[in-house]
Length: 190
Image 1 (tube, rainbow, N blue to C red):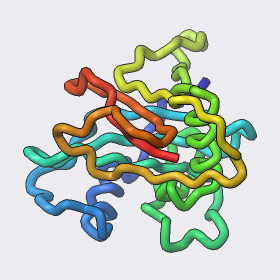
Image 2: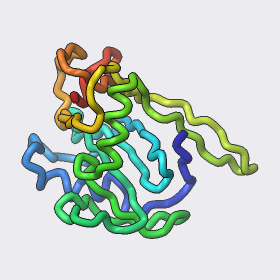
Image 3: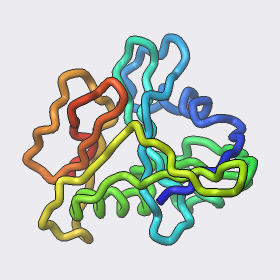
Image 4: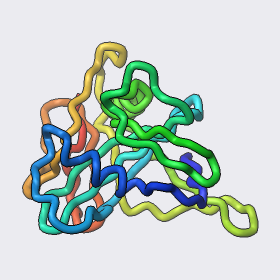
């Protein structure tokens, strides 16, 4: 279960992504207009220390881009090249946002979901009266299940989710759908 704090982020997630995305080799170009959020899904860090969120974003008229992020309370040693940006979180303080593909906590969570047939974390938010309220999910991700050696498994994240991508894959995979995408597509293969 992912606890979503009612907080302000400065700069916001889309702001740091707008700066970072065009510098990535896999970025398809066409960054005209404002970056928009299409959907998002989360996984839990068993240790409860790292936030794990995958954002699905696009520029107007462009393909959906999949950007796995991890949020940390301190820099991730040896991952300077994977730093997407820093943000001030009004509840948690300074946060370092990393490209999840370079963060072992993200990789471990995705491999576990694929191998065990797991799914995205449920999300809860604290209401004004202090109760935890389950947030309705609009983006879904689920693993295929696989008989593989978790310790030796590597992943391939599909960064550009173009029209026509189907959910067929010979490899164990994480599949998902989001608003406007009614059929499952392959998000990550193992």
